[in-house]
Length: 402
Image (tube, rainbow, N blue to C red):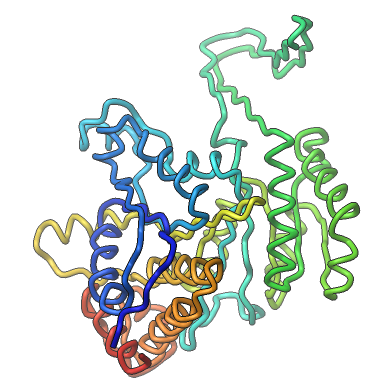
């Protein structure tokens, strides 16, 4: 069988630890035997980010702007412990945060539904897609430890030198303070991405903040969403039979827990970070969650929603077998390949992505899965496979489909 050809490269961002091991397995077993991969490769492993002073992360994001589609492996965001482990020059920022800021995109995460992995919330019948704003809030906050009694203020200095002050707190002893920000341009991009993605995927859109408490910060998000919806998307939503719905974040949580699913839930950055983990875990596993960063300009970056699986990596280094779930990483590749095919009019590439996803789901539904899924499944006759064994089992099903 001739390999499927790609006319335009997609950006490939390699990563860290166990997911880096899975990345190579997936390419060796599931991609390169069937597709003549055409990628522009960037090594976002922590060691190489350190060597390049994190310039490689910026370069990979700029390449995504050039080619339109990227696929990313999970990466380490270093903490104090990693500074010593990797002998880092400094505590580099989250690569995801850097890429999101450059692409000005919104992260959409949705569970991968398979028979035998039932949601913990019994009312959920359809996927719930989390749309997470990808800029600002606590991820770009400035923080300060307050050593003793004193006054903290927010100070805005205009270009003409005039100042506006807002009292934060008068401390009578030690404490902490945090200053967050966002920008209208990013909020508007967030809104456009959400409305466009809802129309593309034919799903209702919910948006939730806490504007009753945060009367300026959160209320600005609410107002911008409503303004853009009324001006640019209301007619298209009505024509498609879709609904845009705003509510408070606590009300949204209550509604979500009683719903059937089947909609997009848009959240600010921190809310989306937390709620996507809740939704993915309740549906089964973070390793069974797709994630795509979508910018209003039409750039797409696909990644696994989970981390680098550090504990399994140390077992791997010790020569022990692991049973690490690679489904989200496989679906990152299929998402990117399908989008590349869609942009290029390459139906063969799109069909391959569909078949690889179907082969992955078929493998699990036949009872062959990694350890994490054996602990969740309602199937009775299951086989626990190693990391490599699971990928090879998928290849058997894929070869039959091809």
